[in-house]
Image 1 (cartoon, protein in one colour):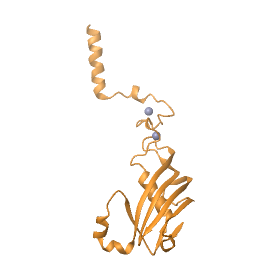
Image 2 (tube, helix red, strand yellow):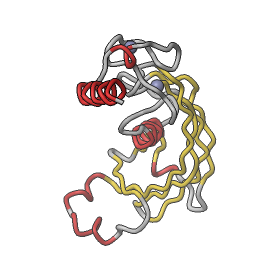
Image 3 (cartoon, protein in one colour):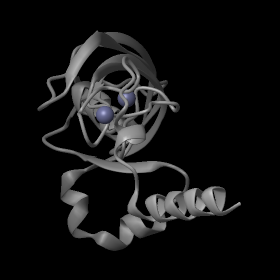
Length: 172
Ligand SMILES: [Zn+2]
Ligand SMILES: [Zn+2]
């Protein structure tokens, strides 16, 4: 939804909307809901609220797709893009709020949702904290199947230990 900054009333406005933002390489599995409170002070716009939905990611360990619910709080102060040239202004306002810019008097809520999604994606997504990953030798997903690679292929360091143990046994 596109919000015209000049249309925001002085007393502020509450918005509740549902959107499915377009994202490169990421599937949105549940439309995103945003509950936003929008206020304006001069040309500065404050947006506070909650964004929630669900996306599909690939597990960095087992490479399987999994669904990740997202729920984040939004707190952004928007400035007209023209202000970007006067950088001192922005430095002054670096409190807890995120700072962003709008262009041509319009704020697109789809961009807000998209930003929140990107901020929520972990560097190394995991389908579960306990994900066992895939076997580097046979490629089996160890969450779904067991393989016997680890018992067959013995680490060379362990192999030395084993021969030592065998020797001790035969000598003893
Ligand atoms: Zn996994
Ligand atoms: Zn294996």
